[in-house]
Every structure is written in structure tokens, then in C-alpha cells.
Picture 1 (cartoon, rainbow, N blue to C red):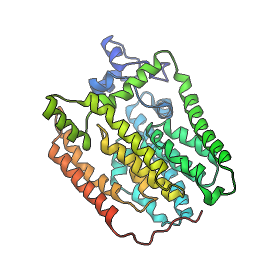
Picture 2: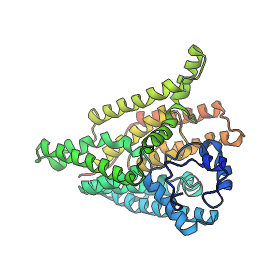
Picture 3: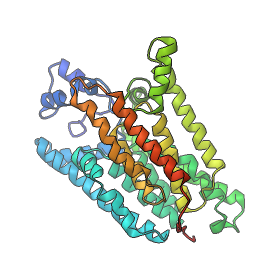
Length: 368
């Protein structure tokens, strides 16, 4: 769409099909493959993700197979970058370098990312690169890279509060710097992230853009349901007392719970070292997924890479038991078997409890 001069945030595939127009090569086959539900909503992919699509179109706009090959190459290159900078972080925090292969050689990553063309690896490349620069105390570059990560997928926005202690209370690095200077750095960090993100979205801005984009993102909270955890329990309680699906209400409450949890671990949990910071990112994100209305398999790439830098391994178990959610795709139209969902989360939560309760072994914490 970009290559043909269309703003993807203002264009609905469904509209072109209904008007009998074919704005891009093989539009009818693409629309048939994506389905009416996808084709009737505006895109929610941020600008750097759109850039990846544009690169594929530049090299292979007249070939679906060619476009797929280009997109896969982009994802593979991103994974190579994750390997490189992930290894450097592990070296600096005195953890085994081989830990990075818990991500890179996980069959789930190969199937869902390179195989099914989900762009989490591109987002994670910028996130891991950002953490590496933050570890080097190059916070300006870290902020720019984190903004790039947000501009691939919005999920790193959840992490922003958790950087507070790294700047304001990281006395092991900045014990001689006045708190006012630390706060100035923190505000600068956030300002650069916001400014860079806005700058990347700016080429697509129009009076309709904000409404279309916020409506598309909002669908994940008020309309879509898949492989949820606690949300399904609350939904059943709603059915019991109200007789209908309460997603419109529950979908608004769940993000609020996530915000409260993030505030708690921001101010009341020790997040001074890199391992502590990444552990906070891991649990903050997982809490969001545990309360979300929609948890697609590819979402787990982020918890998986974060756990590589911590002592926790439950995301690896989750990438195994997430296979139960694939059952829904075997039905046309797709329907979930909630017994499979319950089995998935029973195994997952059981392992989380085991990890939280087991006696800690020797675990290296970086000296910096």
C-alpha cells in the first residue's frame, strides 16, 4: 500500500474489494487469505513494522513468495542481532553465554517468527540493543532504540515506568550524582523515547489517523478473546451473574490492574542492577498477559528473551504448553476448547509457583 502511495492507517482492504478495485498486485487473493475480519479493520502495525513491509514490496512487489522470502530474511537478521547483543549482555552480567540459545534454538521461535512471519524479533532486536546501551550508560542511544522497539510493536510501552530506579536509585553507579541530576536524566530518557516515537509516526499523521489507530488497538481490549487466563474466569463469573459477556467492562479493568502492578514493582521492588531490571520487565509483562483478553502464541517471544537474562525459566515451559492453543485453529470457524486452555495455564502456573518457592541456588549478579 505504501509503495502504491496509500496511507495504510487510512485505508481499509474491505473498502477496495467492495468497490471492485485492486490497488496492489494480487489484492483479491490477499484479501481472501487474510479474511473479512482482518480486512475490515485499520492496521495497528507501527511505522517501523510498516517499513519492513515496504522493504518487501520494494524487492518483490509482484511476487507473494518473493515478499515472504524478504520478510523472513528481515526476521532472521533481527534474530542474529539478538544473538549478538544478547551474548554481550550475558557476558557483562556474568551469566553463561549459552543462555541465549534458550531463545534462538527454541522451536517455538523458529515456527512462530521465521515460519509464521510475526515481527517480534525485530522489536526484540531494538529492545535488547537498547538494554545493552543502557548497560553501557549510553542512555540517549538506549532511549532512541527503545523508541524504535515501540515503533515495531507497542508492547515495550509497558516497560517505561520500570526504568525509574535505574536512573534515580542506581547508587552503585551514580552515588555521587545529586538526585536532581538523576531525575533530569530520567526525564530526558522518557522525552527522547516519546519524541522519537512521535517522529516515526509523523509521516502518517492526518486528522483521521488517531481515531483509526486507537480504535484498532482498542479492539484487543473490548472485542477480541483468545487463549486468555484470568479473564476467562472473570468472564464466566459475568455470565453467571449478568447472563452475557462482560468484555466491554472487564477489558477496561484488566489494563488498570496491570498499571497498578507496574507501579508497585516500579517503586517497591529493587530494580537497580540489570538482572533486577530485566526480571521486573519479565514479571510486569507476564502480569499483563495473565490478565489480558487475548494471548496469541507469538506474544511469548518477549517473555522468552527476557528470561534468558534472569534465573526464571517458566516462559520456556509456556512456549511448550502454548501448543494447546493451536487446537482452536483446527476448527472452521475457529473455536476454543477451554479444557485445553485450562491445562495450559495449570501447567504454567504450577511451574511458576515451583520456581518462586524453590530455594535459590548460586546466581551471579553483575557487579556493575
